[in-house]
Image 1 (cartoon, rainbow, N blue to C red):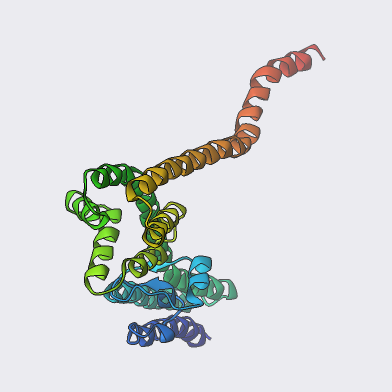
Image 2: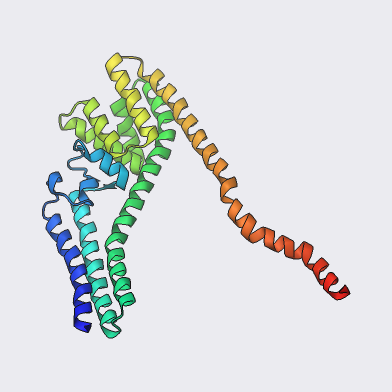
Amino acid sequence: MINVLGALTLGFGTTLGAHALLTARNVKSPSLLSPIQGLATTRSNPRVIPGERSRRDALGAVEGTPEAIRRLMVRQVIATIGTGLLAALLVGSEPTPIGVIAALSAVGGAWQIPLVLARGRERQRRTNVDRKLTDAIGEMVMGVEAGLTLDAVMARYTDRHTNDLAREFAHLAAAIRSGRSRTEALTEMRDRTPTPILRSFVSAVEQNVVLGTPLAAVLRKQAETTHRHRRQAAETRAAGVSMKMIFPTVFCLLPLLMIVVVGPAIVRLVEVL
């Protein structure tokens, strides 16, 4: 019985690890990627396969190079197999059904934790891109009005900053130098970081490319739009604060207030009776 339970737990962890290793060998082939890598938008090949965008948006994207994806999967393998070995030892010492369920849950959690952390870093990266773009558009307006092209303005921003937006601009410039059109490079950047402000910025620049409107006027209008989006997001978060305060107010503050206000009256009533 002990050997069976231990083998079951260890086999579950080893199966997940073997699946990750086999998938990591095919990381360059998007059609063979696992649910982890199939959602990844790589910098070496940032094009999004038709049908993958909806899956990526639904489950959460993991952005990075193929080497970064492999490192993520190696961490998953190590965490899963290590947890599986530890769980097998613990379950083997006390083989109970609850112990087996807890061990399998721990192994599954060890498989998911690196992916959850990677998704959190990607969400933070997208948030940083949105925040920095709101401020960068003002600099871009001044650069364009001074006579610089959009590519030159982005290059100057990349040279002066080392944030996530600067890396996106650097990748955009590299894509254009490699022979892609500006529209195609902008579309790839929008697919890598599909945030509201960046999508709006890319749409405005694409409109300028197609219609030939003055770029400075387009960017100035875009700056107003991004600031409005930022203000609306702040108002939305502020409106949600009142809902978040309901729980601590009802379950933490009101009981204490009732004790302080009604408590002495109850004590006196008990003494009188």
